[in-house]
Length: 352
Image (cartoon, rainbow, N blue to C red; front, side):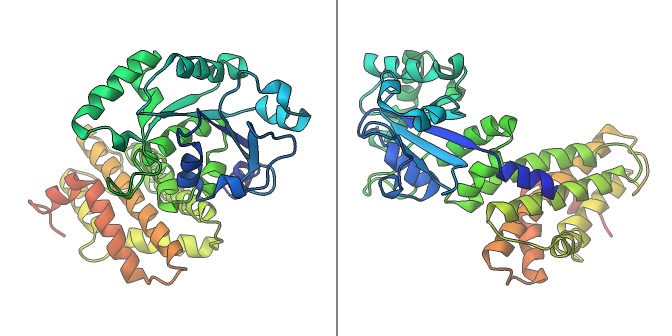
């Protein structure tokens, strides 16, 4: 797994943030990556209307900030042109108060036509907090129709909310989820996650994907395969979370953490989960004969993976100061919340 992670972090990524003046491009970059784009040294060949900057300082992660692409090629030199020729995806920022004008439609088309018409593009209807709450859903629906897009290509956002209307950015999680989905296919989602300002948010797609894999592995009716496969997935997850945080966790520490959490406490999630599975006819290491039992086994595996993911985040962000008792409490709380069927069933008839 280490070699796979290192390869992902050694990959290259070019993200374009496009949109008219005052739409919120700088605010989007600041909300995502915690940097003031104007203070980053530009890539040679940038112009006043096209700004390119390296977020990692090594040239592996380049962000393009531009009003549009229609006339930009003639303004830049070969260095900047190479970046424009290999963009991975684009965020098209639209000021929600301005609506979908013809100029916006023309600019959006010019963005989508890059990469031979195959540039993944997410439209961010920014400053949505300035639209009255009761009117937002209808406004977003009408704007999607005007832009000729599907609902999964548009997110309502407010990267820098008005102080009187809110504090936290709106739609940031949806934007991160969309970007992760696009980059996962390209193999550089981890490089993007590592540069996000909110590390907990950056780790959520990793945890969700690991939980889905664990659920499938946990329900596989192969003696012994469920436990081995699920544990392997969870160890991989903790290793990836440490990489996102740019922290080094020894493999022995990761194995200790996963092992202790899966061992559970006397009243913990795992103990309850095993009790429910036994009641349903599950025998450790034996074939899973019933579909319902397999589903329960998958729920235990998924819930445990969510718990391990959150415990790993908290452990790393505490500079490895949390003890195993604290981690077990975090694990049990999150795992139980993610698999309520297990805890509900265990409290209504299961016993040790």
